[in-house]
Image (cartoon, rainbow, N blue to C red; front, side, top):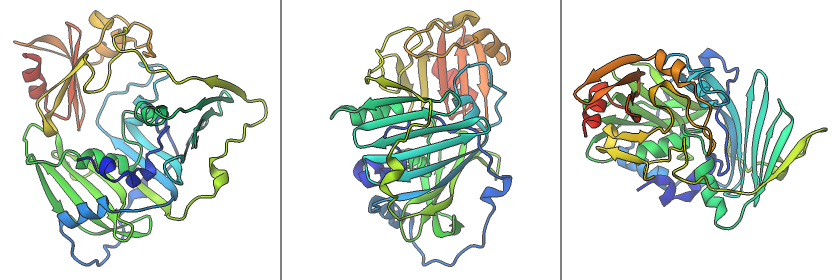
Amino acid sequence: MSVLRSRPVLRWLVPATAAVAVIGGGAAVGTFAAEAEPSLPPRTAAQLLVDLQTSRLEGVSGTVVQRADLGLPSLVGLVPGNELSTMLTGTHTLRVWYSGPERQRVALLDTLGEQDVIRNGRDLWTWESRTNTARHRTLGDTETGRAAAEARPNLPATPQEAADLALAAIDPSTEVSVGRSATVAGQDAYELVLQPRDKDSLVHQLRIAIDAKQHVPLRFEVLAKGSDQPAFEMAFTQIDYRRPEADQFTFNPPPGVTVNEEKAERPAAGKPGHVGPAGDPQVRAVGDGWTTVLVARLDGAVGGKPAAPGAGAPDVDMSKLLGGLTAVSGDWGSGRLLTGKLFSVLLTDDGRVLAGAVTPERLYQAARG
């Protein structure tokens, strides 16, 4: 069972309305440098899982730093306006505040400006400094939960969200153990280690540092096979467990801002360019556990043509994207392959997209089906 679903209080760092990706920040390279290993009473992996499920926090604020070294080719410029590509490389920072399930805020800074997302009761505000524009939405009763599911970025935004995804995967395919203790953001922490048993998984280990007193994730690391350094990591560099002041969740429009009032609209499945999450009729899962492969059809992107606009689809220059990928073929057909340290993506010439944290061979196997 998902830890977040069984203990809703653990959503303290997943802003229910965050509709932004983590944009480039200025964190120093040595942000995650190791500190002296603290001496803590022994705890088993089972006890640490219980700690996560019984954690109770009324509020928290802090700075989260995320760093990725996924071994991917440059995607910048191939998907205009899609900041997810920048999130896959380099170091990024954000400030977060949480004061209960109806009050959250994320502030993201890059070299060119700032973006804020603020949830205060039924009010959802987003603001971009580069254009000095703001968007406001009033959330309804059923809309608050749906907005949370639709608005979050595809990659986890905090150690808690990343940890929840990892813990949801615990089953017979996973070896669970306790690693070394650590000090993260000045807090003593235990380390929970998850290791896939399937040899076709590109993931070597997931490491979750859990605050020894507050029992919440402070750091999340993913190690690829063949490496002892994280390919993806996110951690608090500063954390405060006091409830933030109420004015942190009040949006004060800057001079000259343009405010757009919006209504919540659910994207209609089946429109050109729309690829939904697992469970969407257009997406099917092959296999399970760590070696699950998602198979989807990217309409309008076959043969190097740009993806058809609509339903919020980005204007993807597929000819440039495909031209930089390795050509592959087999008894499953032909296409192009994108590989990184932690995942592989296969774009077939017949318009399918297959992706997973697996070896290319597992993708080819799924493509035969």
